[in-house]
Length: 156
Image 1 (cartoon, rainbow, N blue to C red):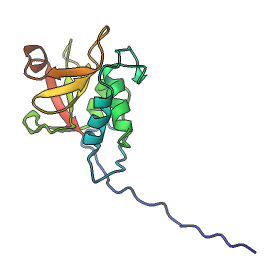
Image 2: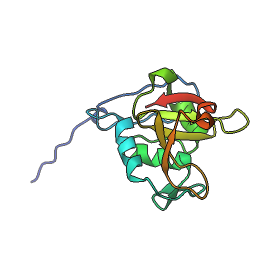
Image 3: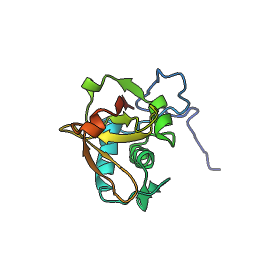
């Protein structure tokens, strides 16, 4: 007679994250504590440079801004909401002057609402899926366009 043995409990994630925003409903799961989820996401986003913009796009056939961020963080084991506004609501907000490589940068393009997101790289630049007719690319936070529209910085 063969015997089967099993663990009575499931293993706990190696890193647990809590949110301070009250509207958060999707906690991230971080699977690689040796390298932050932001750095893994950034590595993934860098591999997507040049992929065309596609409204509602969530894969390498084409991305919109939140689709790129969602896709990149999924490769780090973090499940994000679909829209830039919901990603903002579920992230841990930090002071913009404390921005680190792999953090998300949030922008209000119109009507003072979060409507764009990218992943901060270094040297005051970020990767994003900018708009129709353009591909995933770098932009500078030093440009007057992005500087005056930056609303917040967040991380997971």
